[in-house]
Structures are given as C-alpha cells and as structure tokens.
Image 1: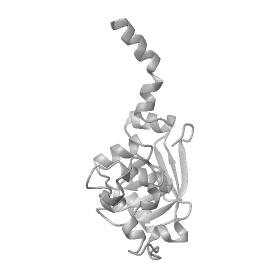
Image 2: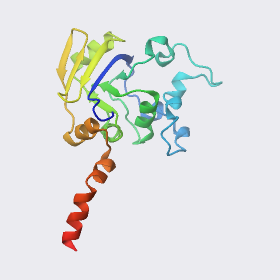
Image 3: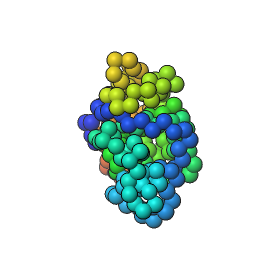
Length: 192
C-alpha cells in the first residue's frame, strides 16, 4: 500500500478452501530467488496450471471474474505451514492488496503486514457473507479500520498500530528506521 492510499476498493475473488498452506500459495520449488518481481506467476501454481503448463480453466484466478480484483477472500486457516516470506510476495506481485479470512496464520500475517499486504481476520458472519457473494465490491478503509461490502457488511477490524502506520505511510519497518536516521544519529552522538 503506497503512502496516501488508505482505502482499498475492489471486487473480491473467493477461494473458500480451508487450511491453504504456504506451499500451496507458492510451491517450494519457486523459492530459489530473493527477488519479489515475477513471483505472482507462481501463485497457486499447482492449482492454476496443468503439469504441462496449460492454465486450468476451472481455477478461479484463471477466470474472467478474477480480473482486476485486489482482494482475496480465503477459507479458514489461511497460510498455515512454513513461514516463507515468498507467500505474501507472490500475492502482492499477482496484484492482491488484501487477504480476508476468519483465521490467518500468525507468521504469515506478520510477514504480510511487513511487506505491505493487508491480512484481515473477520467474524464468521462477515466471512460467510463474503464467501456467498463472490465478486462483491468491498471497501477497506485502513484509516478508520472499517470494512464495507455491498449493502450488507459494515464492520471494523483490528490491526497492530505499527503495521497500520507502515501501511498508511507506504513504508516497511526498515524504511521506517531509515526515516528516523537523524534521530538515531543524534542519540548515538549523545551517548558517545
């Protein structure tokens, strides 16, 4: 999320599968790079493509309804498994700005927020509505921590304050530290 872009407005892509692990998000054979660019083409690779590389027409991301959607609504226990940072990188590179579920693995959520991907946990009721209405227009306001969907959903969400600050200001934790460099240097000079 870049600075000044505090509201995500998009239609949703719904992937109601429970217990999607990070190896399904991005298979281990694609973890040979530390570059983020290009990882989107590996997102859900084994679900999106046949062994010969042809797209699977029955997978939601290969269907026209998914075009231009920035918000993924996933089943319970999203991104369980290993802590690979490539998983949020792949989702971001593909074009997602937010993932919504009733339960998101803690390590993934932390990695996602540090890398600019909003990972939101919602109530069962909100989740059930989103699952039942694929393609619904949503508005996620990071400033007010409010999620709206269609005429039926208007709810708040929680996000750790430092992660929220970074997302609102378009910085990661290292970028934040670098922005504080003059203060750090002044402090260090006073301690020398």
